Image 1 (tube, helix red, strand yellow):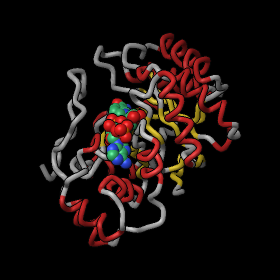
Image 2 (spheres, helix red, strand yellow; image 1 turned 90 degrees about the horizontal axis):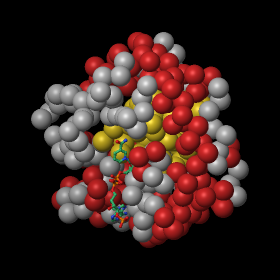
Image 3 (cartoon, rainbow, N blue to C red; image 1 turned 30 degrees about the vertical axis):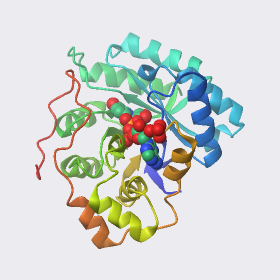
Length: 278
Ligand SMILES: NC(=O)c1ccc[n+]([C@@H]2O[C@H](COP(=O)([O-])OP(=O)(O)OC[C@H]3O[C@@H](n4cnc5c(N)ncnc54)[C@H](OP(=O)(O)O)[C@@H]3O)[C@@H](O)[C@H]2O)c1
């Protein structure tokens, strides 16, 4: 495993995404991921599966300090008293005393002041309900504001990132602030398959296009990735990326695919960064 440094804490760079993994099959998927070796699990209030994640974590018998659990507060709960309630309810559903990383899922579409939300997040951290705090879906301008206003360490920004979406400006801004970029939709929801560059590189290493995309993310400083799968074979394949390395020219060829291939863009999304290569 490769680890990322979150201000002295270690986060496994490869995590398991759980969006849409609910019910019995959701529990099974998380259990399979844990059996496979995943130790970093990504959930959110919005995924409506924190109970399932909690059940799978407990059943695994894995020591708490070997696990890294992230959850997120939905954008309808960003006022301070709502944040406090959301975090307590998440912990209850997860059957945990604390999570490792707590994220603002999206910037507030209703204009809740960022300082208020972040102060409530810092309070949750001070109370031991989370070890680290961060954000999700924040473009550079909002990261600057957030870091400025928080005035204490901010660990990560979870955003869409895969070979078809240029995130170089954001990644530069995060690195400059010692923050990790966690890539969601790291295999572009499956769209990496059939791409000639990714397939060809994969062929050379005996790996799939998805494994190449994940490996490409792992080889970028300060980047983590959280692929999701409900299929045991795919879960195992997504973890099987630590026995090969992409050469510099292969990394370069994959970087050349970048463009404006954004896939997650709800109507409440913020103004995204203008992409240099698009
Ligand atoms: N913060 C946010 O706003 C946000 C937004 C979106 C996602 N996320 C997080 O990021 C995680 C990952 O994103 P995502 O789930 O949207 O997309 P993804 O991980 O890029 O792709 C998931 C899709 O790819 C398929 N797949 C996975 N591995 C495969 C493999 N090895 N071979 C073939 N197909 C494969 C899955 O199907 P099978 O199940 O059949 O394998 C599923 O349909 C989410 O689960 C969530 O935790 C966060």
